[in-house]
Amino acid sequence: MTGNRPSIFDAQRAHLLAIAYRMLGEMSAAEDVVQEAWLRWQRVDQTDVRDPRAWLSAATVRLSLDALRKARARRETYVGPWLPEPILPDDMRALAADAAASRAELASDLSLALLHVLERLSPEERAAFILHDAFDCDYSTIARTLEKSEQACRKLVSRARERVKADRPRHSVAKEHHRALVEKFIHAAANNDPNELSTLLASDVVLYSDGGGRAAAALNPIYGADKVIRFGLGVMRKFAPAEGFALEFTDINGAPGYLLRTREGVHTALTMEFDGERISAIYLVRNPDKLGRVSRPSSLGSSPSV
Image (cartoon, rainbow, N blue to C red):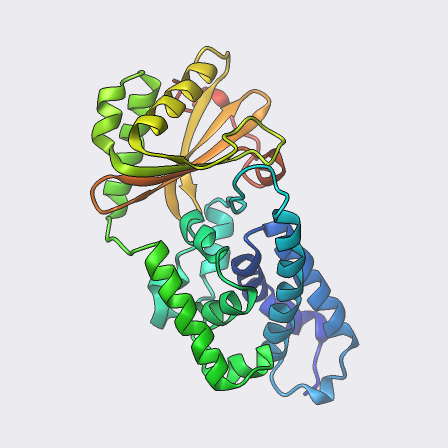
C-alpha cells in the first residue's frame, strides 16, 4: 500500500482519538498517543501495510496500553478519587461518530460513569472490551492487536463485561427525564432544601469529588443520602454568595450536567447517574488540570444565575 501519509492519517485521526480517550479517560493524554502514532506512521514502510486503519488502530491501542500502565502508577498516589476528564458536545460528537452502529448503546456511551468503571479493569481487559464492544472488532483482530490468542481475548472481553455489568447495571432513563432530575437536584441544592434532595437521591447514593490536590474536594467517596445532602448543601452555600457565580447547563460526556462558573473560570463539572428512578451516583470534577477543555469563554450574564 502506498499513498499520501498525511491525508491517510488525517482520515483516521478521529477514530484513533476515540480509541485513545476511551482507553485513557484524558483528552490531553489521548492526543499525545495519537501524535506518537503519527510519528510511527511516518517511519513505517507503507509497502508493508495492507490496511492503514487497522495498522494505525493497533499502534494506537498499544501506545494507549503503555500510557495507561504508566498512568496507573501515577494514579496510585493521586489525592482523592480519580475521575476522567470531562468533554463537551463538540468533542463528544467527534469521538462517538466513528463507533460501530451495531453497538450504538455502548459506542455512544462516553459517560464519566462508564469511564470510571473502566478504570477498574486491567489495561488488557479495557482494550479488548473497547475494541470488541465499542468498535465491533472481531476476536482475530483483537488477538493480533494485543498479541494474544483469540481464546485469551474472549476471556478478557467476558471478564470485562461481567465487571462492567456488576459495577454499573444498565438502567433506561430518557434523556429528558435525566435532564429534569439534574435540574431538580441543582434547584433543591441552590435553595437549601434537604427535604427535596432526599426525594431525589437513592439511599445508597455515592458522590465522587475529584480535586486532585489542586482544588477543595472530598478525599474519599461519600456514601449515603444524608452525607451527600450535607456535602452538596455545603458546596452551594460556599459558592452562592460569590459575585458572578453561575451554573451553565450543558451535556458533559453525552449526559445532562452543569458547569459551575465564577469569573475566574469553570470550578466544577457535574454529572449524575440514575438507578431508573433516583440519583445513584454524582460525579464532581474540580481538578483545574481536567477543566481546560470545558473552560471556553462564556458570558456569565447569559448563564442561569443562582
